[in-house]
Length: 218
Length: 222
Image (tube, rainbow over all chains, first blue to last red; front, side, top):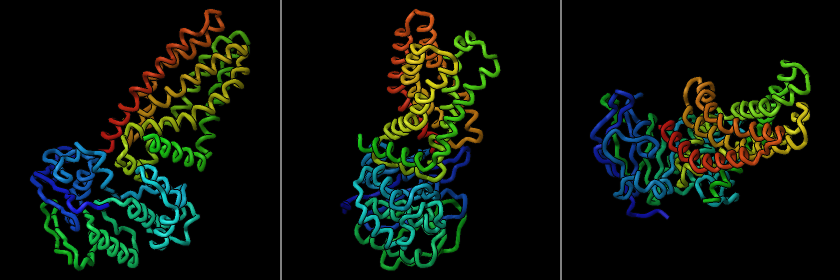
């Protein structure tokens, strides 16, 4: 399960897209039970930072460490502990929600428990769409399917890029609860969002990416 | 490890079963291209026998190319490719699984249609038998090498055309040995040499192509 001692740390990280340097000299350490809220205006490098943290992109300089070791040296272990939800949901339109969850379990090398998956979909308010192909679901509903996959993955580090896009008020409240539960269970979350999150009783670190100051979110 | 490979395979086969249209288009394309040649060059049986093996092999390579552009593109578009690359399992296995699925979906049906087209070109049964063996050995090469091209051109505008230009030269050895095997058996010199070379080329592709494609995929996703 979730190791108490796990940590994600970043040392002197620099990121460039083409010739343009997005940020450099970034340092932070995230420990179990903590949330890192990445903030910054559009185009300041939030998504680029998250992709560096997942290992999808390579840093211009510096390194990302998981439990003190660079992630490049322990890719399998790190990717077993981490799950990433990007702008795209990773949900196949031709499959129904349960099938989507079954295949994402298989691809992550986990066993699949249909009852648990159905219960998770129900918890996310998708009980009426279980046998519909995701093609006919709305944007927000597809986002919920992706969130169900996130919950079932059982990863200790969640990296979420704008997780609240397309979600209604109920789903946002649900998401806040899920993040809180995950952190209380010793998990870690790195998230970008432009929306205000109600996260009382949670250890939040804020990280400003880029040099454009934005008003403080409550 | 093999569970991951099976998961990739099952996923791609299920998705293909849901979109049978794409699958049918590739088969029709194969039949159409092969059928245009008799109309173009005239119906003399001697001429058709002469060009038959080459035409069928070229048609098979083109039909395989047609579907390759979407080998990774669909998954890239909806974000599931990133999820698969971020799986704890090696990316090489992902690429191998997807190439294998591509072969099962688009390669095997070519084998089933080819004898009918062979009859259309007036090939002897012996020649058709060798054509089948050469396609059996050759179509996996098309899928494996095609995976490299599909990974390299992922996310590029006009990637489909670029893919064709990149990959067709790599198909040349398979084409030469494949069509050459059928020519050999018709000329009475035997097909063993060409089929052995084709087999060797398959083993080589199997060992090298997934690694290159996996590396290309990581670069394309960056």
